Length: 218
Image (tube, rainbow, N blue to C red; front, top):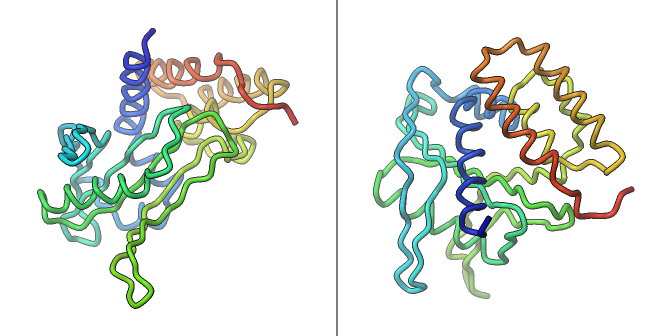
């Protein structure tokens, strides 16, 4: 499989998971924001193309959700950075995504980045700043989820389908790999989902749980 094909498949898996279980995703990772979102008014927009003319690049924001936040129309964007693709300038790129979307939609935006690469030692910034010694021009903050830095044991009893699927991308050792799968299967039994949703979660989990763990065991 080529890098491009792998990237497309990776994006599809995360997009299907987050879109199908968007409410569960928000309550799991961002419970304070969850309380402010009107889930009766959700619309997933087509994948947004962001053109960077200066770098001659075309990139897409994975998930853009139109909803109401505190009774005001707004957007929530969820962008997934794939495994093994750490980029030092991601904070600047995230700023460009949000600024272009704001320019287009003129709505307030909640920006979220999911980092799904396999190296647990990579730490991402959560802010993009532009400043001089004599003044601060800009500070842009965004929310992050660094999956490999999460302890899978803390999510086993969440009774949340997103938590179950993402166990496969959290931090665990080679010795714990089989135990992680057993706990995932127990979660499926407790959740009692329909066959289609069970299949979606299982396909996601199996894709990443069967991969070789690339860092040293504890």
